Image (cartoon, rainbow, N blue to C red; front, top):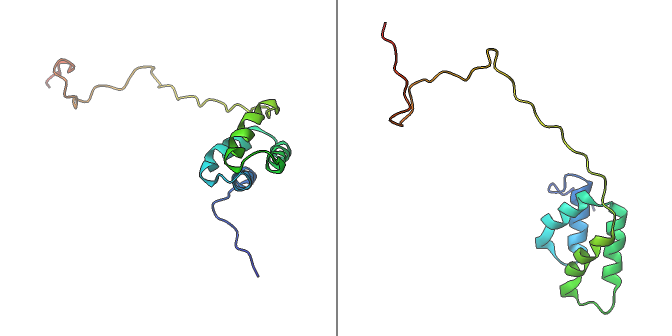
Length: 114
């Protein structure tokens, strides 16, 4: 029996988020689990989910809430900040000239006739 790869799961974070949402019986909260999969280590999240699932006195309906409340004691991954894009400067440093397509009454500059 061959298993076809799931095309929705693009990265390790997607696979982790899918596993967590299935373990905690909350498939509709995939996006929330994907967000935390990017912020925390995989081994810590899997260990916490295993702890929540094995907890006997916890009803199935509140496992997700308990899991998210327990995230506070985990250490986050160091964030990598993206560099901002720089916009190109104009050669002469001036704005583009008015082309006459504006609909506002007072915004048009008088044009010279040749």
